Length: 253
Image (cartoon, rainbow, N blue to C red; front, side, top):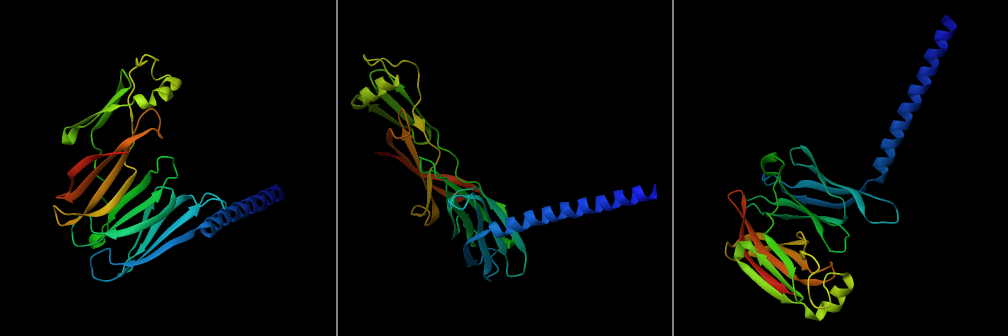
């Protein structure tokens, strides 16, 4: 009985050792897969001392530059550590700009999704006084649009009382082929036009406020994504904890 017990203990020891080794090996591989994308030296806390920011990622595989994991590691001048996780994507980068106008630069991270619409991921974080706070991006404009009979379409932007009618007769062959319209121009069923989320933000100077803000670009398409009608361009300024719409306009394709 004692001999059987001894064998059981030895067997358990080797199984445990194997489990630890596998776990450790897995962690080592993960560490080896980490890639330093960019290193920055910026004062992001407001203490007038440079902090170290390292943007890292892990590729989905060796043949692709798509990062399945992206994060930033921050070491402040007083040795505090922070980690900020970001959405996966291509070519991540961080811009250091004071978008909330508190006198300290924020971390404005972006990466490309690689989709057909050219949409990018964005994240905005402030670390003023050593507190990591995520700042939401501007809200979506109330953009609506739909097709009508006789190869027509209408788009409206609620915030600026904008309305535009489109004559799409020059695209009728394509629309008939897709089953959107009948040959006489009758719409087969109620159909909305395609309104993308914000594909691109640019940091710009808002002249009306004499400070930095964001310019947003949203593509509007007809029956499919490549059937581009135009772009809604809007400018936003962060003030008193909220994004304020400065202006918005329609840009024809």
